[in-house]
Amino acid sequence: MSTAFAAYSVYYYDANYNGHGMVGRIAEMGGTTVYPDPDLRQGFNGDPKVEGFAESSTALRIAATDYVKNDPNRTVYIYDAYAGGTALNTPTWSSVTNLYSLVKLGSYLYAMDYDNARVVEIDPSNGYAQSPNVSYTLDSNLVPSGYVGVGQALMVIGSTLYGLFSCVDDPSSYNPTYTNSILVKFSVTGGSSIGLSSYNAGLQKNAFAMDVYNTDIYVVSIGGAQGSGGTPNGDSRIQKIDYTGALGSATVYDVMSPSAENPYEFRDISFKGSTAYIMMGTYNTDQSGNWVMNGKLVSTTNFSTLTTIDTISAVKAYFWSAQYTSVNDRIWYARGNEIWLYTAADTSAHTTLTLSVGSLLSNNELYPYDNINDLAFVGQYGTTKAARGYRSPLQASRSPRAVA
Image (cartoon, rainbow, N blue to C red; front, top):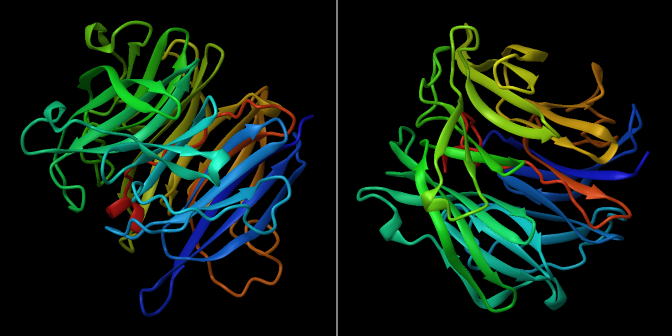
């Protein structure tokens, strides 16, 4: 088995409604050999976030920061995922107000800013500073009148960078209206420029996650505002689009929609070869008025015959994702306020990490962290290939990240 690492963040609010956040890491070697290591850093606010990347075969990195609306001066802490300890660098990315994605292409990193629909180049050889004047902001001409673009996810396929943007009338609204999402293929010259190569503005509303299989990018969308009261947004979709040519001339195909058998919104997708792992769910409220999730984690090879891995029944929590990584053949499943690790070859059992002392909380825990806010797979020690991490969507959460 190989040694792999992930990073996570948790938060709580005190009696004065002040948020407190902590970032930790997880080492795992397959099977039940999983070692959570909390307190990589404390002192964040109520919206701590993490991203992971492999800088080289022996340089696995965790980027940790937090979010305050309209504050471009939040420190980003870069850690060695293998060694932990003191941060290697503490840059400030003034062009990245709200970090939503971080990927490596060539010798550089590329960060997605949600608030400003912007992609920014980061230079690891210069203390992880921003590359001067190397960024791309979604052209307002691509966004319909009355809406603004927000940045959701980045993905590298081969040597090409792709970005996913959703379009919303008011990102800070509790009841926003959405229009079609936009997928962009970039033309990148490392250290010099990020430009638009082609785009497709025909993706379903409120798209936030994507993965690749064969020659298609698969995109997950809520369909607009998410449903409530157990009724999903009927426009939720999994769609696919061929990425090999110009995106503007490619057809967007619907792959899955909510059904009577599966009355859920789609929330995540990842692939192991031809097998897709799909997390779906719809929020309801319990007798106490708490948000609860009902849904499923399934696998499929044809998007019509589904094999249920887990059934979610009225789980009170706000963070959900499911990502397959080839390292140790794992499914990293953020199940609300627990992290489940399946071995994909046998999903009859799982290793569970919980918000408890000795698991995701430290042995001398003095702080009542009671919610998971983020989870990112970092990579495998000994290889330069890092599986992509979680792409944070807008979900019904009581954290600032979701309502910002």
